[in-house]
Length: 234
Ligand code: DX5
Ligand code: ZN
Image (tube, rainbow, N blue to C red):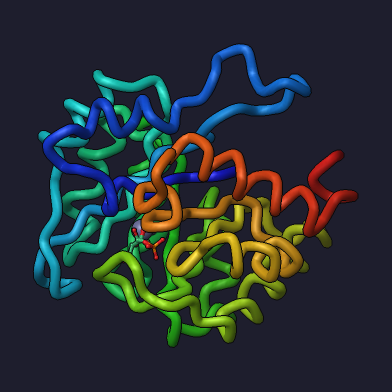
C-alpha cells in the first residue's frame, strides 16, 4: 500500500491535493490498484514534536472531501485523551506514539470501539522488543524512519531491523499487523524498505514534491513491485 502524506501538500487546497492522488476508480491498465491506498494525515501539537500542523476539524472536513481512507498519525502528547476523537471522525486508522501513550492497551481498545484500526508508532531510537506483547492489541505498526516532526528528512536505514523483526512476527503468526514505514521514503529508498517487509509506505515530499503526485504514487508502487515481485504479485 502507498499512503501519500499531506504534510507536503498545499494546506489551502487539501481536497484538490487528495483528488490528485485518488487514482482511477477502475484501477490501472492491468487492473491493479490505482492511486493512493490511504491518505496519511500528520497531526502535530508543537509539544510532542516541535511543529504544529492540523487537528480534528481539518480531519473531519477532509473525511467529507475524499473517499481515500484516512491514516491519521498523531504526533501529540496525551493521545489517550485525544486519539479516539479521530476514530469517531471517521479515520480508517489512528496511530499513536508509544512514547506518548499512558495506557496503550486501553487506548487501542478505545480506538477500535470508536470504529478505526488502532496503530502504534515507534520513533527511530525506540526499540520494538518491549512492545511485542502490546502489539497484540494493535492493527498497524508505524516504524518511523526519520525523527517525527518534519517532512523532507533523510531515511534512517537502521530502523529496518525493526521492520524485519515485525515481519518475522507476522509471518510466523505471532502477530497480525500491517507494517508501515514513515519518513524519507522515495524512489531510492523504497526498495530496501520493501525487501525488509513493509506493507504500507508513507511518502510525503516524494509524492507532493513531484510535478504530478498521481504519477509519483504509481511510480513508487511499480518500484515496490519490482523489489519483491513474489510477495507483491501474490
Ligand atoms: C514526519 C511525518 C511524515 C512526513 C514524511 O514526522 O510523520 O509522515 O510527512 O515526509 P517525507 O516523506 O517527506 O519524509
Ligand atoms: Zn507521519
